[in-house]
Length: 140
Length: 111
Image 1 (cartoon, rainbow over the protein chains, first blue to last red):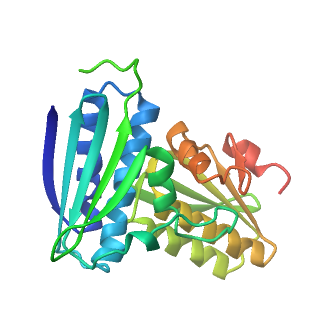
Image 2: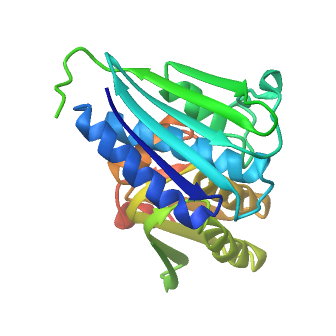
């Protein structure tokens, strides 16, 4: 297994750092640029949702992002310590309803094979995003 | 990093965006677009040729600009989407909602 873990503050200026880390793991997984861009987007949206909803815009709270390359899958675990989210309340919006916002969950579900929100004890939420790698990918 | 600028281009106002558009800077894009729609400029062309990344907050900002412009009968067109940005529009199923042109010359036609 190959893995990394970074902690960034819930400041949108640090999203670039998360994206760069995700991109590196996708490259190690041998993903092509299109596949990599989608995964980067999904993880970025997960962090954006944490900042916006779990931390309600506070910029000094921790977000822990762990990336794993294991077996035939790449996965990312996002941990926050903010307001708990109720998994049943998280659903993508109807795309026919043209309005700004609400696309993040749709992107995550569209790109990843599984998107699982879990209660993480006293504080916050664990979000696991998982994607099976195409059989043709060659690890680097 | 993201940069945004505006200039008059014939009958339209050109908005040029470059760099990565995400939650940290999409409010700046919104501020620029809302400044134009508030003045009810007749045509807004958004050149995305220099944009290497866009997240849902950037998309949401463009949706809002489109809706505001449509509200007063203005035109709101996008030009020169990079493959990465087009992919995000496709994921959002928005490629048929916006008027999207391959380049700026095409986006200016018929204004």
